[in-house]
Length: 323
Image 1 (cartoon, rainbow, N blue to C red):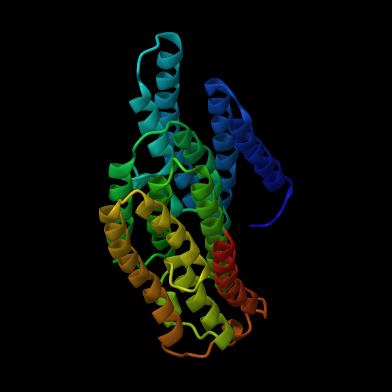
Image 2: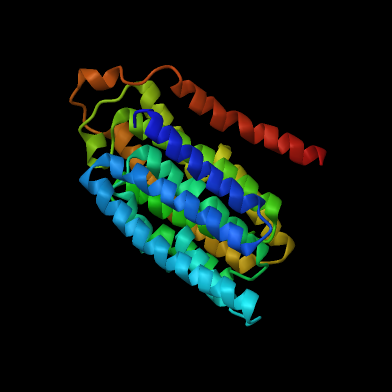
């Protein structure tokens, strides 16, 4: 996406809406901040053309319904003192795309470019996750639903955007397993957002949208290694950066003897690792047709991605040993 005044304007107002929601002390201002960020995000979606316009309509309908439910829940809680927290939970689950309210994410993400995909899967979920962390409720059922949905339904996908969408649903399950521990879910979201941005940057530079495009392309060694390492890291393979996220979650859950949830998480992580490895397999072992413009499409910064994934794990283990 080209940088222009329109992009800067709507990005600024979107970030402003997020900051208003995070810094507000009243439910009404939180709702206003959510609406500002939503209204600022929709015009950016229409810049892609017909597919973007279709996705923007779907996104607007879903977010409008969830915002109406959220407003109704907030008003009944403030004016009548009724316990309508379940409405607030449902509206925020719809906004963030948790299972079983996840289908809209997969429909919308197909019509977005990679830059908007990063915003949808990271920045636009910060405020709903933050609000749900303030509710101090048990989300174990939602955690199990999201983990199993993201791991099982992502196995047969060939669209890279849908793979990233199911990966987001899966990682939301991990985030909500420690939603009552602010430092943990914030660290998890930051590391996941960083890894996702690196992976999407790779796919954007290579102009890849489907797995079969990897079969019909020839990548140089640095590009292949970058895709392979980033996929392993996103899947949580030790000693990559993504493994730090998993280790923090498992350590927290073991302190509360939640061994069944840990077992389900490990099994689901193996299934998720399978479709990450499928992406790596196509990039490493695809057929060679030697397209010259793909041999030189990636610069030496790919080694930075590899070193970034490798160096964080020993640093993390060093800090763990000192604390």
